[in-house]
Image (tube, rainbow, N blue to C red; front, side):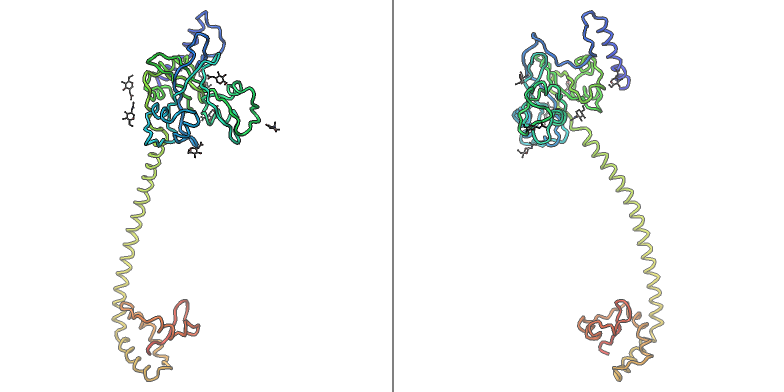
Amino acid sequence: MKLISMAFSFLPLLALSLFLISINYVSTTPADTSFTCSADSPPSCQTYLTFRARSPYTALENISDLFGISRLSIAEASNLTLENEKILYDQLLLIPVTCSCNGNHYFSNVTYATKTGDSFYVVASSVFQNLTNYLAVEEMNPTLNPTNLTVGDQVIFPLSCCPKQNRDRYLITYVWQPEDEILHVSTMFNTSSYDVANENNFRNFTAAVCRPVLIPVSKLPTFPPPRHLPGSESKKSKKHQIIFIIFGTTGSFFLFVLSWFLIYRYRSRKSKRILAHNESSFEFTDLLNMKKVSKQEPLVPTKKNQDKLLPEVSGYLSKPIMYDRKEIMEATMNLSERYRIGGAVYKAMIHG
Ligand SMILES: *[C@@H]1O[C@H](CO)[C@@H](O)[C@H](O)[C@H]1NC(C)=O
Ligand SMILES: *[C@@H]1O[C@H](CO)[C@@H](O)[C@H](O)[C@H]1NC(C)=O
Ligand SMILES: *[C@@H]1O[C@H](CO)[C@@H](O)[C@H](O)[C@H]1NC(C)=O
Ligand SMILES: *[C@@H]1O[C@H](CO)[C@@H](O)[C@H](O)[C@H]1NC(C)=O
Ligand SMILES: *[C@@H]1O[C@H](CO)[C@@H](O)[C@H](O)[C@H]1NC(C)=O
Ligand SMILES: *[C@@H]1O[C@H](CO)[C@@H](O)[C@H](O)[C@H]1NC(C)=O
Ligand SMILES: *[C@@H]1O[C@H](CO)[C@@H](O)[C@H](O)[C@H]1NC(C)=O
């Protein structure tokens, strides 16, 4: 591929030297894509422009409105079905136009009503994606002031096109993109790189970035889906997958360690608790005694019993005692400070 592009980078030099040898060559301008016409050129013809579906012209109806062409003819040229007219962002479309010779250049006129913030340059470079340039627009609209347009002004945009075609050959206007390479573009149009270079007078395609060039085809191309969108998406999803895998692995590892740790702690606690339970077995009987005692003197629990009550609770933890909320509220006098022993822990007597 490098070899081929290297070969092509020499072609302009070759072409230039051939032109220099030729006695007829008088123009001093470097070889360029020619949209010129003369008196003996065909007056007008049907041809195609390429247009990328970009915001806000992403729906077929908007593109059809912009070019003043029926939706059906765009759909037919771009091999879209009208029912399923969902166009991908940046998708290349073929716009059928009538291209005419306007004295010395081939143009397809499109009338555009200016909106707020529009200038010839902005509309030519963003709305019409450099299919024309502001100088040609100024020439075409001599009555309008390029720096003071009124919203709603009808401006004629002359889009570059070329009808020089035989019955079995179209010349499609394509705006060269910064990332384009001749091999890639000719593959996209299913045409030969040589024909593309030849049709554009072996021009320097690096200098053609954001300018219209002509792509000769024998059959209307069907463009692949926009290349950078699905590509970046799959790259993104791959990236996401990798991140997901990394997080998943480390996450599950930590979960494993955590659960192992919890199980270990639970087991050691359980064994401790069994131990504690055995130790407190004598206290349990003691509590029963205490209960009897407290029934005799319900209001004044002895100091000895108070000390015993707290450790006793741990003995019951494996078998919690449930109390009614009403009972707790009554016993603590609505969680009174008097019964609080710290934080949200209260001490009170329920049923003795
Ligand atoms: C695109 O078409 C829709 C529906 O007809 C319309 O509401 C919207 O304003 C159009 N957008 C542009 C930029 O023309
Ligand atoms: C046009 O699209 C249809 C599917 O929508 C496909 O079957 C057909 O091959 C396409 N035509 C060309 C010329 O690529
Ligand atoms: C474009 O419009 C201008 C002004 O109406 C006209 O002079 C010119 O001939 C038109 N060119 C084409 C190619 O239709
Ligand atoms: C049109 O060309 C200009 C530079 O000449 C560039 O900044 C702009 O991005 C181009 N517009 C599009 C839609 O590619
Ligand atoms: C722009 O044009 C309007 C009328 O079309 C005029 O009133 C205004 O003064 C003009 N502004 C400038 C800066 O020329
Ligand atoms: C490309 O063009 C050749 C004929 O020039 C044709 O046989 C082939 O099917 C085309 N490929 C695609 C993908 O359209
Ligand atoms: C092509 O054009 C680019 C930018 O204008 C320039 O840097 C480069 O040297 C040119 N290449 C040739 C072979 O003329």
